[in-house]
Image 1: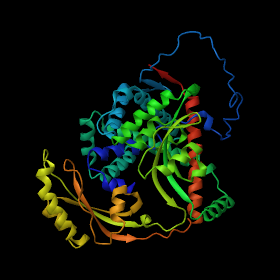
Image 2: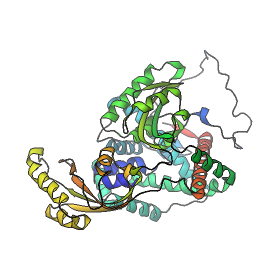
Image 3: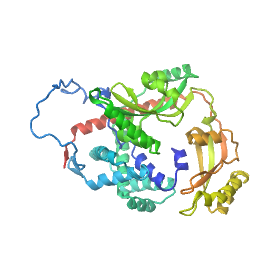
Image 4: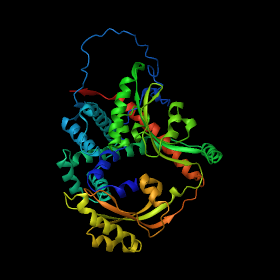
Length: 460
């Protein structure tokens, strides 16, 4: 998201976005079989979509699989090495603030292996359709990502190497994302249709719900096989502890959630309480924006719910304002304490409050040996909750008090422009595009499921 890129630090969190955000389609797209409702030609083939009729106490023949499968595989003859696994794990460690708890390492390793298998299948399927992803294509994407993080590809490569990963791992993710996107365009998008009557029905429903309370919700769902929720609750509490220590909810949802929304970081979108299970609907009003619930028992398992935002449908909200911002950031020498930095922080705070708007930002940055970054089209509601409260009453030309960390960067945001947004219903074309995208994504997940079914995968 633009706001997060604008506010992220230039090293650790910048790389976290690379690790968790480049290949959103390729990463963690597993979904429970019970959620497949699409009836494709493959689904209707003989022998599929029938009850398995499994015996309660099966007699086993031959050697069972080991409890832990080694993290190397052949996918239709293509090798996934231990190094591939380790380098992806290193990226996730960076995204998690520098480490992965030991008790989560093996589960995460297996998830990374599944992600790499999916990524390999996607690249192979694209090649079978004569879709070529050139090195130049990958270079362009890598260059754009590096620029968004105020770094060069060479600087990213150095950072990855120093933290146990490599630029090769990111290039592979980019290749998988580009291959999967182009494959969808060729094989899926042309088969999806949305009727005008469907679009109008959505618009009518939206207008009828004006003023209704809605919540933007994220979910991490963990199943409880056999009805024993104790293990799922224990895992959920471990995840919750990491989230309270600053870990990424989106990242953990992609890696651990067993719901179909894992592929999009657990995002349920904007929902009304009536659309959710009663157990979750009753908890939502007790949460503050940005909070994550304790484990909630739901049918089949437990859920962690993150309240990301709330609103009233088609009702004016000052947090919908679109801002043009300048960020002034300053840094301190390594080892500087808060007490040592205090005089400079006080002077910096006085300077940003008295600089006379965005026109004075460059001089203030120069005086404090800092830097200025400009960013437009930032929604106020996409900023961290604490900054939203500070900036709601602010006018064009005003700056926030300094915030951040002496060990990383201290910064201030200056409002250069502010446009209020009309809370009218979306246009016909916007609704059409959203419905079309949802159907493409659904078919893409089912297509990947079929690729898994047909693949020859050997574990070593």
